[in-house]
Amino acid sequence: MPSMSSMSSMSSMSSPPETEPPETGPSETGRPSSLAPTTPASVLERAPMEVLSLPNTSPIPLRMSANQWLAMLPAILRSPIFALSLVQALIGAGAGLFISYFNIYFVQHLNASPALFGLLSGGAVAIAALFTLAAPWLAARIGKVNSIALTELVSIPLLVTLGLTSLLPLAALSYLFRQGFMDMSNGVLQVFSMEVAPRQHRGLANSSYQVAFQVPWALTAPLGGLLIAHFGYSPIFLSAAVCYLLAIATLWGIFGRGREKRFCAAAGCTVHIIT
View 1: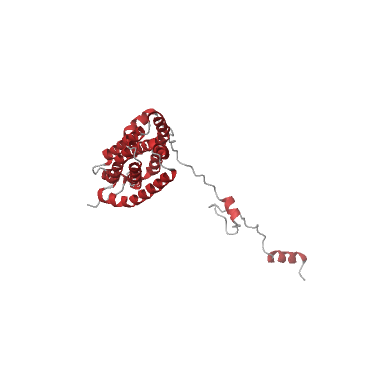
View 2 (view 1 turned 90 degrees about the vertical axis):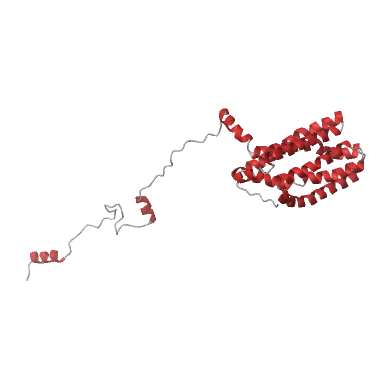
């Protein structure tokens, strides 16, 4: 019969040795071991954080000095946007002198009835719409600048006749066709004004044209009323004719005689003229 000491030694030999539980922390390489938890939260907690740094950039000056503006002034004055803004300013100045006073000119000065003036106004708009349909064909035949200058030039004698005559039938006929010829190439002028402007500056160009047209109109409209009160109606029509002639001369002098191709090529557009 074995003794108690031999039995205790046998039981100790048969039992497995006690070992410590494996670590669950990250290994020497920084990655979690195979027994480590792999939940997204634990991965994010143990992953190192990287901070992105932006490169040092110098601030862009928002204001320009007087010398910088003076240095840019010659280029601005030679730009097509400035030239066409000047054209719009002259047209707006001329239109502001007399457009607002057409109704009282016919009704009070020429003794036309309000119904007749309304009929003339509707007819002038209809004729202008018909002439506008023919403007693209004319621009394709002789060029955009030539068509704009030609149609506006034809309207000048009608404007002078309208202001100098005292005969209602002659004034009515001049009124009908003057607006038609003057407004005939408005769409062509708008297209050309956008084509010669650089693509990245076309928004600025459009705003400049609008301001250049509306501001002189606002300034010359009260001036036209003062001229009528002191000198009658003839000076406002003659002054408007001078403004229109200056606008035509500016447009033709800068863009006429085939020079519109050079401005369009610089802006990246093409000019198609049927010969």
